[in-house]
Length: 364
Image 1 (cartoon, rainbow, N blue to C red):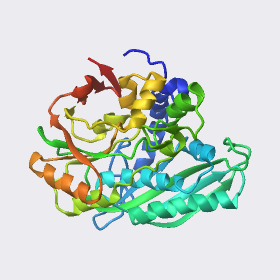
Image 2 (spheres, helix red, strand yellow):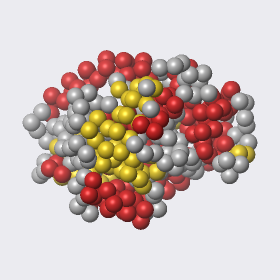
Image 3 (cartoon, rainbow, N blue to C red):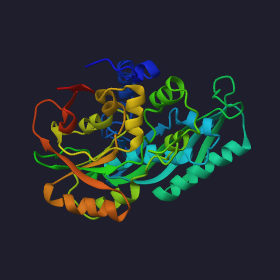
């Protein structure tokens, strides 16, 4: 792969090193699985899926996931606008839980702050409530931690970190894990609302450090400022996905396209590969980022969703129904590809001549 001028690692996020470190951590985390084996609370999936599933008895599975919003927090501080970052926190968690076909029901938040700033916390809470409203979940509690020695940020007394943990419910015998994907099943892609909450470190490196733009710089291509674009909340896919699940569609897999881009397709259980033969034009923010940063397509399609924020795998004859349900909820949806049987899990993005394997994309 060619070395791009702007790399995620050079911007401060070394995903390859992270994966190596995660292997060392995971061996200890997996040891905990045996502590409630064959009992209520037993773990049903291995690490690596979007959420995990806990058996709580009576054929009920508790889907659990935890995630934060990353350095999008710094964009909020640059804009001095904090009433949408809570939407991202909800989205990053519920969008993982629904990958099991689970219905999200509640989220706990954790806010680490530089200072217990009442205005900041109320604005964050407004976003959390709005996200909960869209996802139809409750927020039964949370935690505020004063960590002034650790949390700094870029605006005095407004430094914070925001993380959530979401739980959902699904019948154990109806959980969707991608085990029964067949050759020629279809990939339906749901449109994203832009960058969402991944790759903001690289975006900040390109726009604010390399190009030295101010967050209030207006772009005609975006019809708004760069700061407003980067702060656009992550789309919450709960309403449309839950309707698809409840409609009885034969959904084989549900895949959140976050960090690692379309390589997320390979995180499901079935040993299959994916051919993407159609992609809609991504939003202008991706083109601007690639052009200004001189970022290769290999890097762009590995770091970002490139306009597709969620994927559904299902039989070809049910593609139209899934697309219609998405459009009913105001979400653009497309048939973007299909499944092929191969020994090695790969993702072939034909329009861009990109082959994804071993968690990276390569030009061919």
